Amino acid sequence: MGAKPPAGGHALFDTACVLGGSIEGLLTARVLSDHARQVVIVERDEVSTTGGARPGVPQDQHLHGLLPAVVLWIERWLPGLTREVQDLGATVVGSDNWFLAFDGHPQAPNYADHQGLAIGRPFLEARIRSRVTALPNVSVLHARATGLQYHDGAVSAVRYVEDKAEGVLKADFVVDAMGRSSRLSEWVRQDGYDQPLLERLEAPINYATALFERPVKAADLDKASALAIFTPQYDSGGVSAAAANAIEGEQWIVTLAGYGNDRPGRTIDDFRASCAKLPAVFADAASGAVTRDIATYHQAESRRRHFTGLRHFPARLVSAGDAVASFNPVYGQGMSCAALQASCLSSYLTGDPDLESAATEFFDLQQLVVDAAWTVSAGGDAARLDAMNNVEVPEDVRQQRWAMEQVIGATLVDGSIARAFGDVQSMLRHPDTLADPALLERAVAANSAAQSH
Image 1: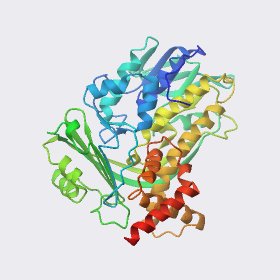
Image 2 (image 1 turned 120 degrees about the horizontal axis):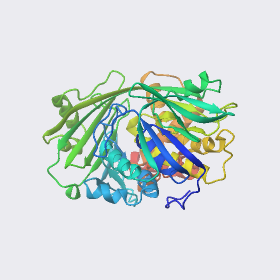
Image 3 (image 1 turned 90 degrees about the vertical axis):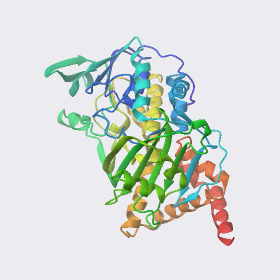
Image 4 (image 1 turned 90 degrees about the horizontal axis):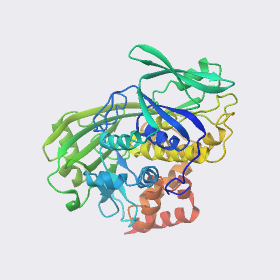
């Protein structure tokens, strides 16, 4: 699949329904607008197209960014959006103004020509919502979805509550985009269908995020986006990761993350003290006047629901986004995953699907995307937890982690390896590409040469 404008779909449905109006739901609605006479987004939160926090997205006050993969795919569905948000203050991020460090050591320049965007999540979501809801066949129903109805083994309607009154919306295709707390799995189980297996990985992470005035224009900054990651062995003052972006409104958004009992930056003084121990870009970003008090967020685990291999599942029903997999946010893959899953749905619907059977082909495509993101985030979290708890791991896992350590170490001294690693981080390439023997051999040689000097 290439990131090109959609070729135009054909009407498969009279009414398609999307449960949830966050970024995944909005991109899904955009895809469905090519295949349905009308698309109805069922969203419980009162939302606007001007931005602002909302209860259904508790993490939206923390740092987000558009990875290069997201920029490509959002442009596929909403051409010109990235230019629009740049004109409104979002910052272009490329190899010349991007900073990445591991245990305080900066990554080698990789000179990749990929471009991402530094942008606030509420602002981005508002611009996407404005575009999608302006489509003539897309509408929003402000209600809470409460269940499904079926006919001949396929979804036929959505039950909802609006202003305490119950209603039923007939639908020919339904997408669950209700996020991490989706109850779809419980609904289908209660209705006699197979319940997707829920996989959990402990990842107790605490976030603290603040906004600061940015007196320097983004174009004049040496670094407009920064990420620092620390291993458990490194004394980082309880900070496992830190990120900073120059965003709209001439502001810096800075997020500090800690694992387990570490809760860095609970007050502004603590926040700035933590930033002072990190690479200089973080102290600079946190030096301006505070424009929004600290927001905190705790996530105890990463979750993944497996929809492949189900023997008895309703036709015309799929899940997407955080309803399928929600990762440790520090890896920044959530919006990329959402955009790629929207592309999977487009491929499925344009491929002459069997709509009278479960959407097996879609779930298989989706699994490729989720596998890639899960490998990076869950793999990193599992390694951290095992190291913190002195867990003895199987030999094959130990070898895999050793290989990844070699690759990460080599990114500090070898630009070509930094580029390969960056492509995977940006979800432009699959993590399996880092297992290439030639790449690993180069990484080992680069690390050996660095240690000998």
